[in-house]
Image (cartoon, rainbow, N blue to C red):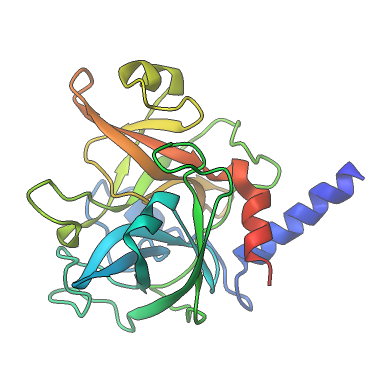
Length: 272
C-alpha cells in the first residue's frame, strides 16, 4: 500500500511537470547558469511571473512561479493586496512597463487570476505555511520564454539530500524609496544557513523555513532552485516568504517556504 501511494504521488508530480502535451519543465542553460551575471537574460528562467494588483494603476506585487499551464505558486501573504493578473514572458530593467521599453520577450502573456487557494494552516502575520496556489482563467501557451519549473522529487519531499548548485531566481525587491515596479529580474547564489541560526539572528524567523543569505533582497515569491539530473534541470525547492538584513553577516537573510513539505496539498489543488 505504501509503495502504491508513493507511485501515485510520483506519477501525479510528473503530470504537473509535463504540464501540457510533451512540454518539459526546468529548462537549464548551463552557459547562462554559470556566467556569474546578476541580471538574467531573456528566457533564462521562463517560469517567473509578475503578479499584479490594481491599486489605481497596475502594480507589481509579488513573484509567481509557473508549475503548469493553469497554476502558479505564490506566498499566501501576497493575496492581501488583491492581485488580478499574472504577466509571463516579460524581462527588463524596469518592470513598471509590462508593454516593455527595452528588451522584451516576443509574445508576453497577461493572464487573469480565476481564484487563489490559500494553505489551510496559514495565519496572517505568521511566517509558517505561507503558501498559495493561483489558478489562472486561461491556459498559458508555452514558448521558449514561458515554461514551467520542475517540482521537487517525490522521493525526497522534504529536500533532505545534499543540496548542490542552488540559486535564487526572481525579482529584486525595491527599496523603500522605490516601488516594486522598478524591480530587476535577477539570479544569485545562496549561502546556506541553518534555520536555528537564522532564528537566533531574528526571533520571529521560524525554524521550519529554509534559510539562506544573498547579496540582494529578492521580492516575495522569488524561487529557491537547485539543479538535478543529467541533463540537468532546475527544480523548485522553496519560495521567498520572509527576509531581513543582518548587520552581523552584512547580507540579506531569506526565509523560504519548503515546497517539498506541501506536495500533497499542491497536488490536491492542481488536479484537473
